[in-house]
Image 1 (cartoon, rainbow, N blue to C red):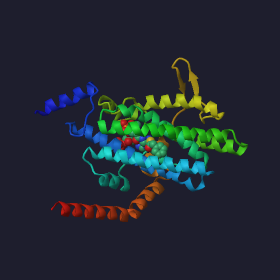
Image 2 (cartoon, rainbow, N blue to C red; image 1 turned 120 degrees about the horizontal axis):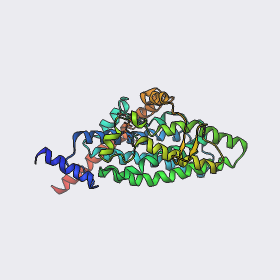
Image 3 (tube, rainbow, N blue to C red; image 1 turned 120 degrees about the vertical axis):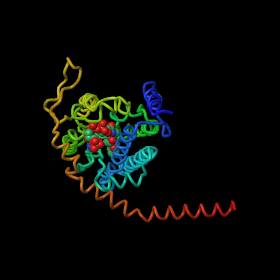
Image 4 (tube, rainbow, N blue to C red; image 1 turned 90 degrees about the horizontal axis):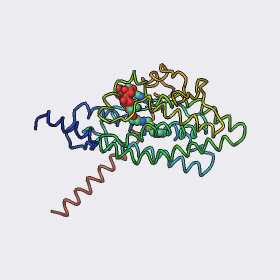
Length: 315
Ligand code: FAQ
């Protein structure tokens, strides 16, 4: 078959909303874009375990501790589904992890901020998981089958995470003056980094147009950011707290909230490795990988032993 015909079949599938599967022909750039996005996404889930793991030993009750452990474990699961989805595009997990550890692969900027108080567990659930869901629900309709299917399960779990975070903040907001203050301080610190999660403005986003044409992305960065701000501006009223933006104001004409200027210098600084915790996060991942070498070796040795045994039984 001519490459031209293959490309037509590919584009027709995209138009007709038929999923592209691993063995289908696809443009090299489509494959590369997916590897880039899915591996960055997987790394984000795994690095994203660190800020919350920091509070497991200090959770205020057994119930909160059990919930937080389960939430952090869910994020590990998301990372594994996503690495597996990326592997269907002809890249190994070792290669992806190597890129992360060498500082060559990106992961979400948000996980380079420190978790300073228990209220941060609430703000991460409400705002960080909330932003993640806003971005990820449309990815359930992504044109690449394995990524879309992984996202369906991930979104169900993220939605639970978002509610548990909001509930932590709601409890604190109804507590003592010190607890309310802690919740407000946490929202003040996490709000702007959360809305940066959606990526650069559309006019500064090199990948959006092509990714939308290929139906990898269904909405632009700015569209999703606006939806998220509109939702949070209402939800914060239930908490009786505020978002740290003096320009946040409902605009009747646009039927959206207006909001203040994002500090893009801070965003790029964090993305380029110079945020408050970038070095600490990467060092923690590298150490965990090195400390786990014996587990991988033992698992491979056991698999080899089982294979040899079953071959002997067949012979
Ligand atoms: N941080 O042209 P665009 C979670 C990079 S949620 C760092 O707009 P694109 C759940 C971008 O990669 C977080 N880098 O790119 C959780 C590109 O760099 P490159 C993860 C960023 O791909 C919750 C360059 O800037 N979610 O983990 C960021 O079309 C709680 C130009 O940008 C996903 O990954 C950023 N915020 O749009 C876990 C969702 N934004 O590759 C634990 C899937 C942009 O050219 C606890 N990904 N960059 O060197 C996506 O939807 C897209 O990749 C975007 C970026 C929207 C993130």
